Image (cartoon, rainbow, N blue to C red):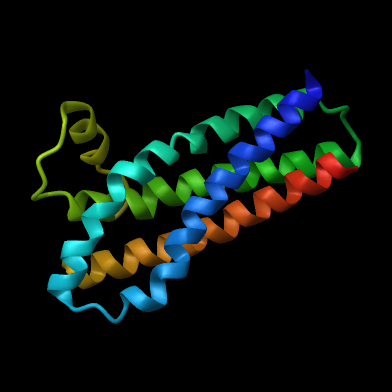
Length: 161
């Protein structure tokens, strides 16, 4: 069971890292887009990335479970604790930077009732215009990619020990 949890946690961490890294790698190209192009492109992300985003809270629960099952005081337990902190940081960045910008992008979009509740959650600082929303959203994904990559790295090392 412990090995299965390790593999599951590693896979969830990889999905979490991949989604934020994909956004971060688009940043240089998206800076070349004008207002109309950017506003046309931005809403295309939400259906697929929302599904993949379910890995993000799941990786926190899996990493916490792995931490509880890892013998305390070992190098592996410290690495798993660091990975847990990194994955929590991914969520903190999402709710304080990404989510307010998401609300900006989707204010003109008709959403399902659950999507409306999720994307209208107002936390963090709301952007004032499209360029502020763009910069906030794009930067948030760079920060998330760094934290998620660190978490994946720490988990990988912990499991390899």
